[in-house]
Image 1: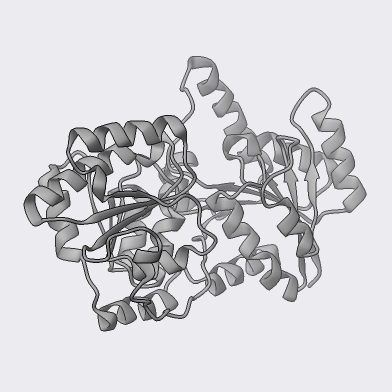
Image 2: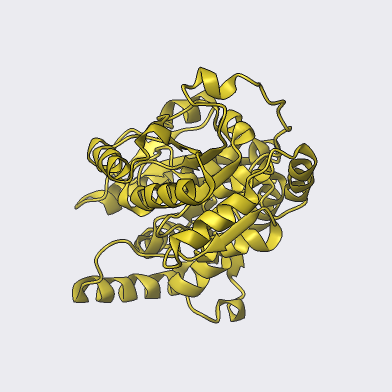
Length: 366
């Protein structure tokens, strides 16, 4: 089978959906599926060069007055067999244009369980119109988890034969050997356990809540390090510092910024905290579980679905007492290699293994 697929994103930056889609590029190419990308922002992204190095292309096609003409020409010129759109309700407009151009397979892929934008009267009616376009012109409707389809498509999505859940896939990592001096080399006191969070600094990721949990944990159980790994944002970082000073726990907070290999940190941490306010299917939680690291997360729909297959993921609401968060974190802290190896093997046979994701997409593209 030889197929050409065009994935539609806002911009090819290092987001979860973009990275997980990029991971399928080479395995699908080996099966005869050629993948290219289209950026609706019209701007270059952080992943563009990596995509080009893999022999693919990123087409910059900015939304605007002349977008329909440019997009029509792009589809005509490159003769794509599939348009696979990841831009929520805007996919309705994209798939309508793909239908006009004669693209035979048109896929809407819902990647979140929460609409973070405003819900004004105008936006609600816009979304209803775009929803109807998806209904008319989509040949396939995918969700990153069951909840994404329930929320963004319809509660009884199982009755629509076009609908299917395809979980994001990660490659199965070998368990790394721990290095005794690892935390020391990263300016962290290695006499105390390490509670890790992997997330960029935005309101959604709920960093201030982590500081309150840290302070509660230290009061109840003693010192623990909180390692914050991800892209920094000055305003939020200063708020974190101020709150940590107020709770007398700043000495246990370490800012690690973006790291080239997150698996080194996941391997050496004792537990992950993940209190995000909304997510689709959080990749950081799956990454942690893939190496057997216990995760304590907010009870988001995507997290609950991960936990159903990966038992090292535990969830509770951010509305529950901080004492309970501290208690669960304390009960999950582990250095037990056998326990981690067991969870690592569970991941291998789960729906979150990259091989299963690739096979599911391959069947759909056929």
